[in-house]
Amino acid sequence: MLLAMTAPTTEQSSAPETIDLAALARETKIHEVLEELDRELVGLAPVKARIRDIAALLLVDRGRRLVGLPAEPPSLHMCFTGNPGTGKTTVALRMAEILHRLGYVRKGHLVAVTRDDLVGQYIGHTAPKTREVLKKAMGGVLFIDEAYYLYRPENERDYGQEAIEILLQVMENQRDDLVVILAGYKNRMDTFFQSNPGMASRIAHHIDFPDYSAEELYAIGQLMLAKMGYRLAPDAEAVMREYIARRITQPHFANARSIRNALDRARLRQASRLFATSDRPVGRDDLANIAAADIRASRVFNA
Amino acid sequence: MRITQGTFSFLPDLTDAEIAAQIDYALRQGWAISVEHTDDPHPRNVYWEMWGMPMFDLKDAAGAMLEVNACRKAFPDQYVKVNAFDSAQGWESTRLSFIVNRPAHEPGFRVVRQEGPERTVRYTIESYAVDRPEGSRY
Image (cartoon, rainbow over all chains, first blue to last red; front, side, top):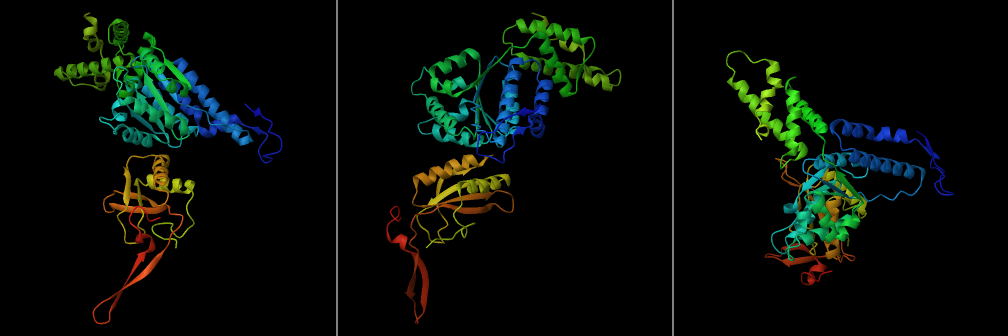
């Protein structure tokens, strides 16, 4: 794709008239990251769409700078909302890499913190603590998990408010030094933003992570197993689908995290099953396969 | 008289971008950055006041620049330096240290002569700045 742009009047006579965005994209290798995102993250269509939008915006901004148009760096502070296990942290990690490739953040590392890392225990402890974390995150992405805990309305002397104020100040004044990503459950984040309008107005991107469908969870399970070097035995595939269908309806279901835990327990059962087989040598297939019985033994099937 | 201590001290004062580039270099080497300030310019004064704790685990110069600028703002009329500490075994000491802020007027040094026994004379230097008490020197 060749996007023709006419440069503004007199200044920047040396700037090119046209810019090859596709070449620019190749140069930043952004497609690789986006494809990796598509390959390794199942589902999450709205999230991926928004990441593509942001990537496109940053790329076009780069093009604008090359032809001499003004390109004010956009505010990229984000809020990820969604149920547990929907991939908020994973996407935040990827986001750091994408923003680094596009030259928006200089170092591209992710600093993941929670309330404990930001809020101090006594008067005067919070500010240095928060500042310390912010300094570490400069040049990268600061990921605040369960950000709503920062604000405790029931205790008006809570030090969380102080941390929020310092955060706001840095988010506003040093936009090109770090990107802040808040994450948490949808309804609690909404309450948090209602009581902190300053925070809400400084975050441009609110991305909602949808729950996974059963089919997506199955695909995620396959990916996890492949990464660990396991696979489902042919007869175990149907059992796995049934397990997912049952697990979704049960309490404390945490999407991909529940699947990972289930697979970890299946690995345990597989290990003790193999340990108990003493009648014959254990082959390569035995070691790699998760059998139907390993999943069937789960308490999910008893309910 | 412009005092010359530490790295780059014979060069013109570094700009903020140059300071950030030097800090970035130090961080790439895995050195920890700290900021110190003093109003006693004597060359043998090695114990400057610390401005906050040394900064470990930084990835980018922006964090250190935040402290440099805060220190400059609090002590615009003092010397401020940036140290880079190398914790690698065998070094375990400061690898890089340079002044990033100095008073507008540096009065310089005088020679102090002390009469010793048997017509010996001991020489030392003393800054005109230290005539006044600490905190009101510049």
